[in-house]
Length: 498
Image (tube, rainbow, N blue to C red; front, side):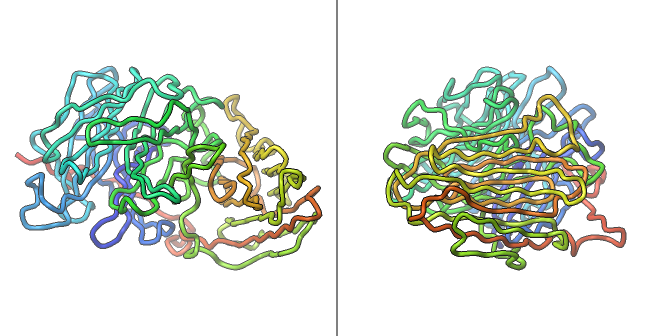
C-alpha cells in the first residue's frame, strides 16, 4: 500500500479512502486502487478493490474522486450522488502515462471505465496524479497534474470532466528534489480571516532534506485558471521522514477545516521494512484537520492536527495538572491496541526569559530495552524525535533523529502532543503548527511510557495526560486474530462501456 487516492465524502456522509495497492505482493507494483470506508475516520471497513488494470503491464496510478451532483458529465441522468474517479493509467515502463476517468452509480463501490478514455493525453511518460475539484466561481472543473520530471504542475479546466483545456503551469517552486508528484490544489480557511486563501500542496521524491520523500506547500490565490503563491518560501509539511503523498478529502465546505491523510512511509526504504511482526507493509497517517495561520515573525503555516480522537479514546492512564519538573510513568502493556495519545501543556510563560527547560517523552520495551524518544526544548523552540534505539530494521537510509525549531508566538503557552500506535509515532507541536511522522520497528512491543519536564521556569505550570486508544480492528479479527484486507478478485466487476 502507498499513496492515498480518491478521498471524498459521499452523499450519506461516509468517508471513502482509496489507495495504491498491490494485491499480489509486498512491494510496490501491479498497482490497483484498494478501497476502505469509515464514518469516523478511525474505524475503517475494507471494501473490494475499486479499480483494476485491464491488461498485463498496466497499472492504475494515483488520482482523485469527485461527486457530480449536477450531472455535468452526462453519466448520471437519474441521480445526484454520482461519483467520478480520475486516475493515471500507466501503460508500462517508459511508456506514455495518460489520464482516465471511471464513474460509479453506487457511491464509489464499483466503477465503469469511460469508453472515450483517455481524457487527457499529451504523449508524456512522466505525467500523473490528477487531483480534480469543482470551482464554483467559474462553474468549471479543475484538475492539477504533475509533469514530474519537469517540476511542473499543470492546471486544466473542463465543463464536464471529459473535455479538458490546458490553462496554466505552476513550476520550479520551493524544493524541487528530483520529481514532483501528487499535487493538491484547494481552498483553505485561514484563522482569523475571511480572505479566500488557496493551498498548492506538492510531494517531492527523492530530494527531501532528510532524504527520500516529503511534502511541501504554497499558500496563495487561485482565479480558476492560474495559481499564484504569496511568496517563494519552501514550507515543509512534516519534519519526520514518513509523511508523503498527502491528499485532502473532496466534499468538505471551503470555509471549514479541511481533512487530509498521508502515506506514512518513505520511498527510500518502504520496500524493505519488516512485515513479520505486523504482517502488513505500510500504513496511513492519522486523519488531520488542516487550516492556515499567518502570525507575525512566523508567516503562513499549514496547521496539521489529529482529527477528533473522541471516538477512539478508551481510558485515561495518567494525568497531572501541576507536574512541575516531574515525570509520570505509564505501564500500558495491558492496552489491547498498543496505542496511546499523550499531551503536555506548559502555561504561564510570561515572556522570553521564562522560556526555559524541556518536556520529554520515552516509550520503551520492558522486554528488549528498545525505545523511541522525543521532546521539546522551550529555549530555542526545538522539538526532536529519536527512533534510533529500535533494532528491528537496519537500513542506511532509515534516518534515526529528527528536529525542527519553531518561533514562540507570545501566547504564554507551549504544547506538545502525540499518538503512538505500535510501529508509528506522530508528534504535534503547539496545536499542529509543526508535526513529525515516523515509523519504527522494535523487536519487542513498546509497553512503558515516561512523560515529564525538567528545568521549567518556576513561574510556569506543566500539565500532562495520557490516554489509551481503543483498537478499531479488534472487532474485525477472525478466529486466528487476523483482519482480512481487500479480497482480490478478477476484474469481471470492472466494466468498460462500449
